[in-house]
Image (cartoon, rainbow, N blue to C red; front, side, top):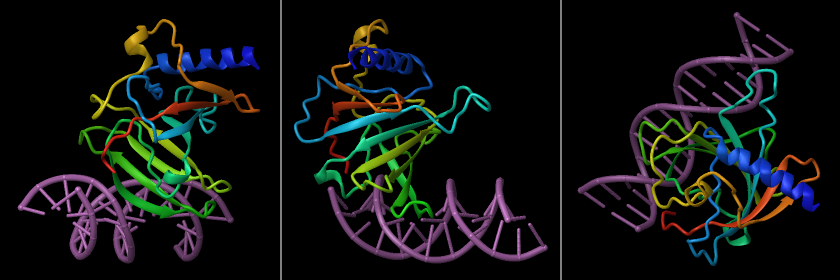
Length: 177
DNA sequence: CGGATTTGACCCGCGC
DNA sequence: GCGCGGGTCAAATCCG
């Protein structure tokens, strides 16, 4: 388990190094007593090796805690503007569509949907990447480690498939919603 | 008063 | 060519 954990940690490092990947903010400076959540970084399955090796979509599964279980809100440091909501056929829960509200030119889109089987798990799908600074806070691993050794202060567990990394991280509370 | 959220309708693409 | 499903837009509403 430990060696696999290290392997995935290294994979995380790869993800963090990739500019087109989702930047995990392992926040140590921001004390967030209440908004703790387990975040899973899922390597895109839809993006096979056939079509596009480097897809623009990142799927992040967030386990919402009981207090947050009602809202489909995945706080990641950016401001999102909800522009639509749909009920898909294969999912009894509605899917919310978000766009970046901080910069009009920001092409990033976000879809948040609950897990069909576990309503406490939110599945956020990010498309594109941000072209601007973060709205509230910036504290990613590369800031402090200069991209050398990303020792994420998170508890990492590995899914049986080996493609899902579950991080126990704390999200800073931003008084937006 | 301003801005964000909500909800229904419309439009587009894909499959049959 | 039609139907289905998904995604986006836009106006009204509500909250701060």
